[in-house]
Length: 200
Image 1 (cartoon, rainbow, N blue to C red):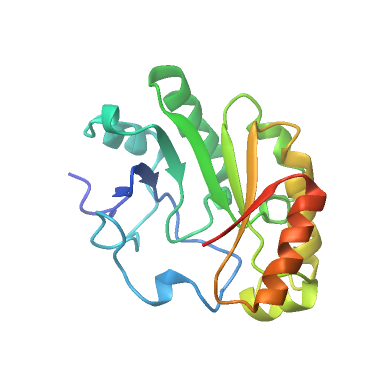
Image 2: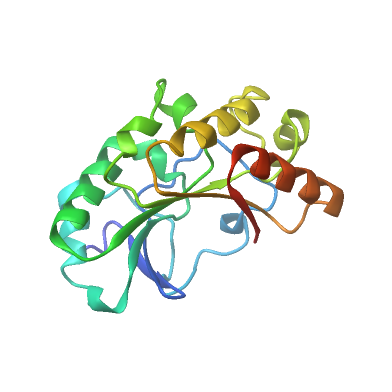
C-alpha cells in the first residue's frame, strides 16, 4: 500500500523502529547507510518520500504491537529533522498503545530547529540516546562532518544536559571505531554530564 514511500517501520532486534526521514546534518565516516541499504526487516531504508504523520499512524495499525516494548525513532536520517511530526506520532502512540518512546539522535536538534528543543520532549519521550562519537569539537568535526562545523560538539553536550530535565532515561553512545583513549575521554564526558555511555 505504501510502496511509493519505502520502508518506514521495521523490526530490529526486539524493537519496532520508525524511519521517518533520510535528512541528516552529518556525514559520519562510519555511517551504516553508506554500507548497506537494508537493516533488520527493512529491504531499504532509503525513502522515496517522507511519510506524513497520518500515514505513519496508519502503518502502525498493520503491525502486531504486542511484540514490542517501545517505538524507536531511528533510521537512515536524523529523526529530530522532523521534530513536530515526530512528536505528533509519539503522542498518538503514547495515548493509544502500551509502547514507550525512544529517540536515537545525534543531539543536534537545537541547531537543526533553531531553538531549545529539549522541553518539547517532556511527557512524550521516555528514553533518548545521544550519539557522542568523539571527545572534542575538532575530532567530532573530522569524524562526523556536521554541517554546523565545530559548533556541533558543544551543542550536543548542551542538549544532553538539558534533555535530562524532561526525559526520564538519557544515555550517550560512541562507535567502536575510535581509539580507546578517545572512548575513555567520551566516557568521562558522559559521566560528568550524569549519563551512561554505551559503545556500539
